[in-house]
Length: 284
Image (tube, rainbow, N blue to C red; front, side):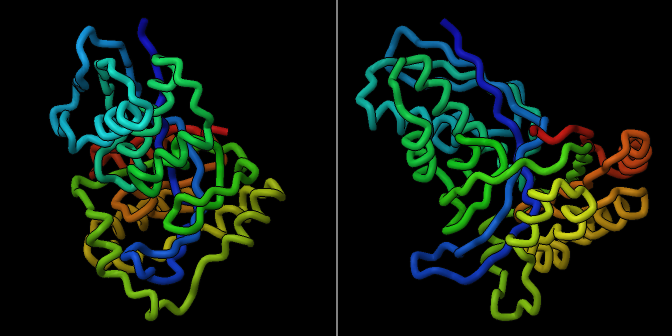
């Protein structure tokens, strides 16, 4: 039997950092939602007790460094599963892009193996398992739209944002999340985006209010380190996107677009100097 799982990308509509914690992580407040740019995973039981991963993408690790591998290993050990699995990753989400591609693959692996091996694990338990793998994995397990607090693992589901187009563009650079957080100085922040105001904008189904409440404090670091990201933001604004923000620690920039007629103009304009451009819909 083969099991198939979709692993969608996430974007941060709002990301605030409140303080650095004693455990070395940062206390955050984020509003995350998913878009229809997704990896696809195929899982099949192996006749021997091992984990094998393959992918058409030649630029990702296929061993213990891969989050999907780690997810499979964790679920096998935690539930004493003495069976093997072969996982094929069809990668569509850019790597090291601020879109949680690896975290979503791990979440999809947890969901898929729960079904493949008929383990009966609840979604809450899967999310708790995911928190052991990374801060974004619990959200990727549950999906939807959520307010995330703590280090990102504490989730409160909220309404989905108004449906719209999302144009994503990733410049040809990789950004280390650890490096960005390491350089971030929360004491130097003069303004913080408001989770409460974004939640209200979403609850009011106001696309213009959602666009006006977009905010990501990590831009203060990434835009300074990588001028390409700043250029992408400026280009999206100039081409007519209604709201523009960097997702996560970057370097991907997304533009929210209400009218389909604008999408091709923005997409084609960005493709002139950026290879990785995607036009997708919100997953609402």
